[in-house]
Image (cartoon, rainbow, N blue to C red; front, side, top):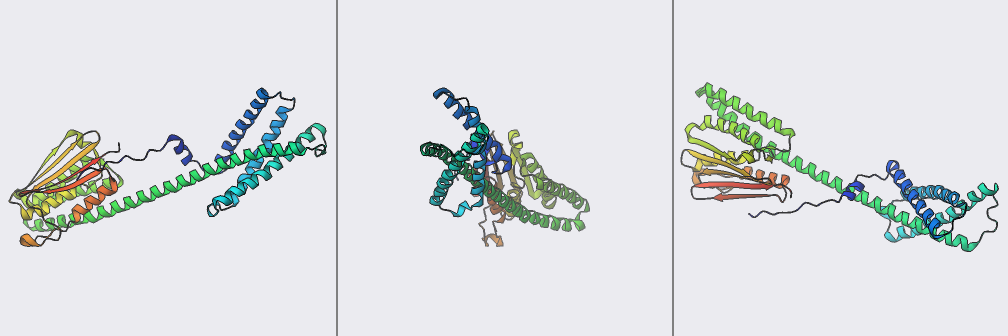
Length: 373
């Protein structure tokens, strides 16, 4: 099999910021007030450098800041009342335009009323109103409300999209973890069943070896329990568990079994999901004992660099196809290898290879995993 390399998607830093934002009172007001402050400062600088400002410019802008800030907050409340997901794009655009013009008119009238009351201490602000002046100001304010609405919906929809994407990722990760746990529980009882049968047979034949086997089995199961809470562990931990397994099987088969290890120092520290190699060794013992001349020889090899780990389990004997009843009634179910395939697919999607290389006198099972580039 050829490796199927793929590069993981890369999020931009600014998108990560927005993906963690929530459009609620704790994030809306700081962003809203900051934006309005910048807007008012830009209007002030434009009036100061482009036009000759009158003595009431600061007062006008202060009133404008208060009225627009409150009306835009009201506009947000209006948007929150509607189920925008059920609305069409056309209806949303029409609604934005309508509310923007209405609130822009309200903003201009409030501005005139408050400004007139501060200066004249009465409410006769409607005297000497000019339609052209109101129209121009309302048009400019409408543009501001429309731009604010566009920014609001852009951020809101982006946050909701990222939240939905995050929930999907979490759901997929949970499903993968559940699948891995199921595969582990499917594998461990199988080995435990075989070990207990061997111990039962040894109790009457060799109590010392039976006691040793119980000790090795307890060490093996201790690794199983400790690795339960770990997603990955160094390869050396996996090899240590296999050595305990080998000690158990060595007592069972005595001189008919030989296992050798060739583990590169760099490979020992490479992180790997637990119980990934064990099914391959167990398969080699199970089927090698039926097809190999004695002693059955198993060789475990591991090589690694900074980004890639290669593991090979080779045993003497012949390959038995799943469902094959030939060769003195031997049958291969393929369950162990299928578990390894599924775990590789779940834990290292697009970052692994898995292959079986049967030869005339031996069978090699190899896999490679590599880190995200």
